[in-house]
Length: 263
Length: 287
Image (cartoon, rainbow over all chains, first blue to last red; front, side, top):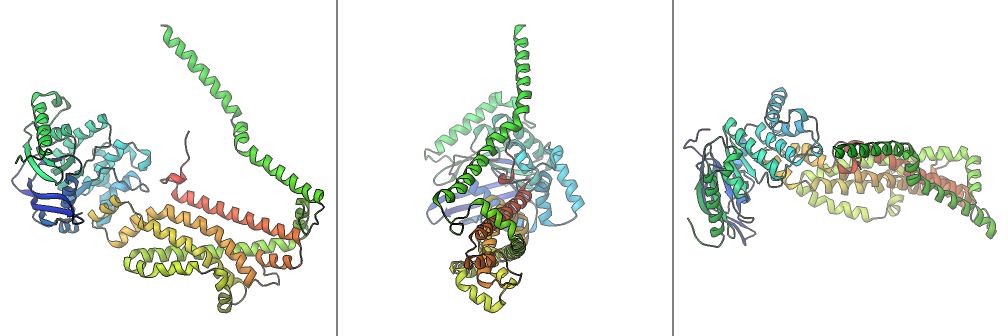
């Protein structure tokens, strides 16, 4: 995946206040370039999901602006398939089979059904679920459900993939496998990924850059470039540099939440 | 090398045990589930049979089970047509409740404005006792079949509407966001998200409504029933009550109950079929 200088997401002095009293985000400033994989890392309540949802047009900034490819996110989701979102729980429709769940975004946009099916099968193959087209979500394990959810997000060929703690509810082994697969997909599919997590190891393993956030009010406290080579293998976790990054991120995370200004 | 052999014999023991368990399975299941209710039923019937004899109660006060059976056999020519008429009336009432109830709910749910303006009146309408408005129904629709179906509908309609509306409005927030993300139109959201997720609620509404529609049909016949071989169970009941044919009244009551149970089972089966592939309520539990 080649990084370019083209900006995909731009937060400009974004504030978000809920019910006139709860400050979810304060003076949030960040731009994300094409091809990056940026993790929002922070404790719960730091507004990282709020920021992500704004990028998807699922929330409006109280002050400041959020742009995606230079447009308002709401315009983007109206006009294009460029933004996809993966929720923390797989969020599959239980009355639809695996295939029909993946077909949903394509179906809602309209177009040729045969093409849709081909595309759906392609992405399901990519996540290793080609043999489960006719299964219902309740028959799948948590990890498999998440794979379907990822396949569904990929089906509409997004340019920007937003993921809200997608692996938080999975066991460690499944999580590691899915992390590897996600990196694989990211490199194949020419995407920019924004990934929300509270797990330091996950953030370091996945990212090209980590945006460390602090809570109450939600602020961006530091940005860490992760200069580890791709493709990343699981063995990288024992690498000294990996450990250094983990220490650095943990430290920023901790000090940021003691209320000290870092950036 | 002794370990594996121990395990093998253990396994074999388990297997032979399993086989013998299977043979006894049918009988033990029967014992567990059906034996109790059957025994209770026979005890109840025997007590019922002996109490009137012991207390010297007349058959028009408390008929014995045998009196009731006699009444069924003797008046079969009256009872059976009455049952058939009530079945048709309640099915009509139920189908109309279901169709109109679901359609109105979808319409109300399609616009918050519409729901806010109309639903309160639907609740008020529901609080008016149907018996109180039934004479008006008779004036409008004439005595007989039409009025009875309308009364049955009036009773069965509300559970469908309130359940369906609740279902249509309790869509999972994340799924709703998903549809927003893909720019789904209002009706795409209705057909592909809200109606499917309301299905369990709709089915619950139909289950309530189906037994109520029988109540409605019988109440309707009390008020709007006509004789001449066109009266249903409700009409038969009013006539038998005037004639103090108590055993026949019991027979009618039991017939009405059986109708209700049968109808409920049918609708439950339909609900299970509709939800079979995905909803918890329709799953077979594996132990």
